[in-house]
Image 1: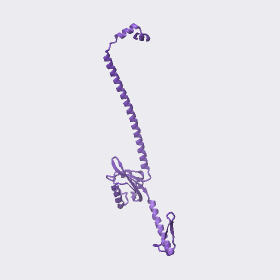
Image 2 (image 1 turned 90 degrees about the horizontal axis):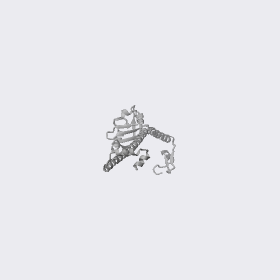
Image 3 (image 1 turned 135 degrees about the vertical axis):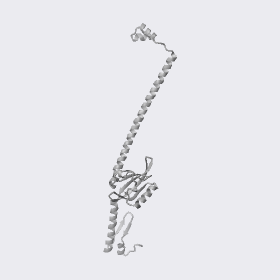
Image 4 (image 1 turned 30 degrees about the vertical axis):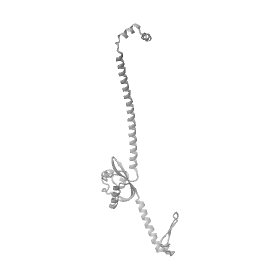
Length: 239
């Protein structure tokens, strides 16, 4: 068969036989050991190649996750900074501001560099001591709250009324208060104006002896003014 191979490749049989005879002979055992060694090397290279593929996939996944985290953080940052309501983040351990949004700066006149690291209760943004004391009690209790009415003072002395909501969150391994404020200054002023108007109407009604009433259709109730009871000679207690 070897000579047939020589014929197949167009080699001279005698030269081909001499060439084969010049090759040193190798014991079978050594040949098997070399084959086993080469097989082991091949398997190791194959394992390394597979591990490299897995590592490349892990790196790609990590890069993808990191990019998604960056995008998520950017969206949260945009929501935080562009919210029309003032938002603050304060550390519970020392009541210091950690972060504020643009609306807080616009309302109070304090920039981020003015506020970060300052104490919530010594900055001067809380309108009065009574409110500050109540807010301190809420924070100390460590429970989320909403609808806490308070006044905020800006650095120029202006006062506005807000409803404050607070949630406690863990940030960088520490507990913080995330507080959101909603301006109700115009609402409270409108309520005061309405109360004054009602009192004025009642005064005019008494002077002019004009009575009026209000009816709650849904509840099926009617409320008379004092002048109505007087006009119709009714007792407000028994009627």
